[in-house]
Length: 196
Image 1 (cartoon, rainbow, N blue to C red):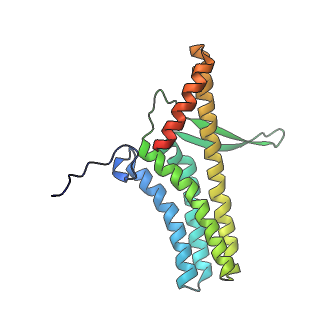
Image 2 (image 1 turned 90 degrees about the vertical axis):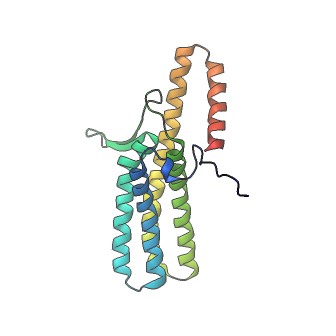
């Protein structure tokens, strides 16, 4: 007798559970295709120029799409860099959606954070592989990929941290019980992270 399969629950890694499946699939498509084109170039072809150009274009499209579209739609986070025209100082600006008005889908969030942190690790592994195989010509491409993916990873991590901090401070001010709010927010964040 076969046991009945239960449908996947919230937060499961199934794109069908996504609130924005086209955004999610496009985001993952850019991330995966840049890695696959690079691997194809290293393993199967000697046409480094063509692979270099295609990979750079895919990485740039991934950087733009993630920063401006996927981050906002999948997890409600966005960041950008502003330059003060008078002093020339640049600063990062972080924006997050209000959790009271917009619920973040657990599946979207899980895919997003997994892809954000996995891609730099995979590029580091590819850099080590290029060093081991003495393919030093591929290292500049890997360095560019690392700069772009780590920049987005750091920016979205900071954006998430600041959005949690501002939500925590806002709720503490309104409730009057700061210690209770701190404890409950940290506990809920811990259990939410464990589930996702």
